Picture (cartoon, rainbow, N blue to C red):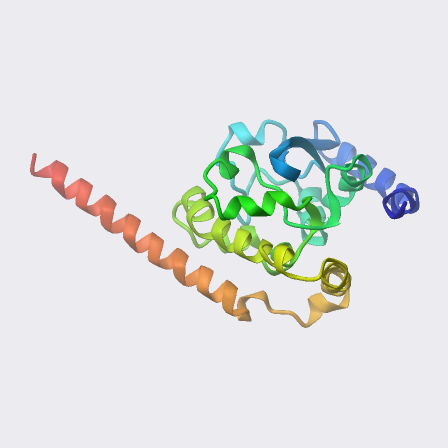
Length: 229
């Protein structure tokens, strides 16, 4: 009922944003992508399109900060998280809930460990502690030499680890706390929060720097080895 009420309440905003997306770039208004949901069932997650059409065929599937594929309107939608608004439809359908682990794409989920797969026993959500803490995911990946590798080796385990909180907390109290925090972070909280100051984010940045060094050393060794063959 809450999802239906919010969908009706937000309908004028949804229509306005749909017109804006259509008027400022070519392509469909909405972007659909297969994600892995409750108990491993795939579903189509819906967002407002924030990138140029065929963006997934132009470069990495991981979006980086200042990615040229993101449209001007898309940057605003991503920053304000309004691109997620159509996911109220996913909530109405029962694919998602308001609070829960953010669903990932099948090619990432297939590499989950058995322990990581436990989060599939919870219905995925529009918001979570992980999505709030790592809301500038693209900004973090700008430090990576290989964003795809950094995402899979560093960010995915961190995101799943944070998602595990949904398994270990009292559902109602935890969900309400996340919802309140989401409203605060997306409104006045953005004036006071510095994500880089969070220990989890700092560790991710250190791990990315270490991965860069390892990959550069490996590339240098491969090059040197080739020169002597």
